[in-house]
Structures are given as structure tokens and as C-alpha cells.
Amino acid sequence: MDSTISAGISILVETFYQPEYSHPVNQEFMFAYRITIENFNNFTIQLLSRHWDIKDSNGEWREVDGEGVVGIQPMIANGKQFQYVSGCNLKTEIGQMRGYYIVENQNTKEQFKVTIPTFNLVAPHKNN
Image 1 (cartoon, rainbow, N blue to C red):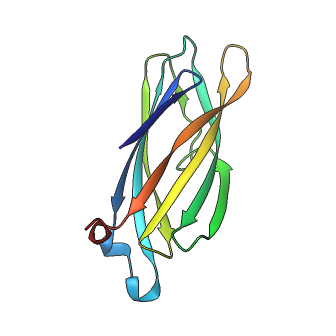
Image 2 (image 1 turned 180 degrees about the vertical axis):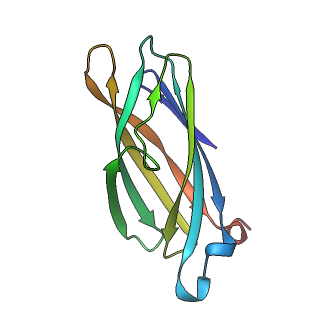
């Protein structure tokens, strides 16, 4: 697990290799990740958008931007958590993701960036 606290918000990441959706012969490796977002601020936030930098071990980078997460823009009250699961496909058995969320303070409507920690995606057979 990887975690960080940025702008009063904790981000915890767990990753999982998904062999049933992977096809190594075709250089397709599927990973899932579970992210837990906890708001330690004294105000409610709304997660508006996300940005990902995704790297395969062959050195290729790609960027993904989008509204919210898993089709929603969740509100997270002070002291509350929001958790979701999503996925990422790679061309190699090892990769890395990093990124950030844009969230909005619901009291002031100020928007700010929350860092998502860099985390590795590794097929279990590569851990030996």
C-alpha cells in the first residue's frame, strides 16, 4: 500500500494484478487499484476531476484526464472517507502510476490539487 496526505486529505492506494483479464502473449496486463480518500479538513470537499500519468516499464508514458472518479464527483465531509476501485491496462508486467485530484472546498468554492502518491503495478510473478 502507498499513502500520502496532501492539503489535509489522505490518499491510500492498494493494487491488484488481474490475471483473468490479462493476456501476456498480446502484451496486455490488467491491474486494479483501490483508492481510499479521507478528508481531514474542517470542510466538505467535492472531487471534481482526476489526472493520471501512467508509465509502462518499456518507458512509455500516457496521460489520462477526466471528470470525477468511476463516473461520479463524490462529496466527502470532514472526517469521512470515500473508496473506489478502478483499473489500468499496461503493455508490460510492471508499471507505475501517479497523479492528482482537483477538489473543491464546498464552503469557499476554492479549488485545489490533491496529490495521489506514486504507486507501482507489478504482476506477482515479477516479484521473484
